Image (cartoon, rainbow, N blue to C red):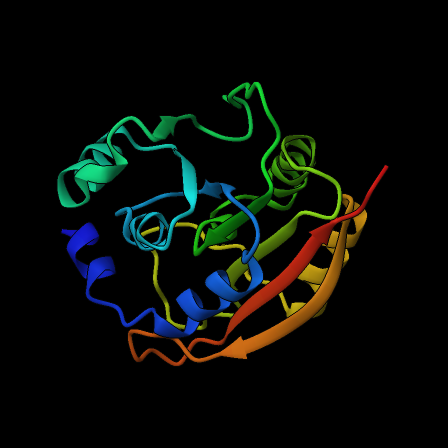
Length: 185
């Protein structure tokens, strides 16, 4: 199953980035919770994570693998099925999710998320670059780091830095980890 595959990846590199950049924040939003691996890690580090995922089956699997996430993941198919939150979040992250949307959908999602966040909120987004692997199981938005940066800038985010990191499952795919912050109004 795909969730078990995700669980086996060595995420220390990204977990260190999440912990460091979210220090001093409490209420965190995750876009694309998947197996629950990253949300579970952050919960154990003392953060309050609320996740959004478009797959009911994946939410069930995440709650099975990580019971501490029960009731913390909202089923919503973005960009149209956006949830409503009563309070803004202090930070946000999305690991290997936003690359599965079209450019137009991505812009909508980023604008929606902007509204969910406090000004200057730190954001971490990790996406794959150009894949060239022939994978056809899922759609991938294949963009360069510069193309991703342009979309972030056009939707209300400041790019603090970009890290290029290798694929954790050994494929020859570049990954970009963007450290962003929400621009104030």
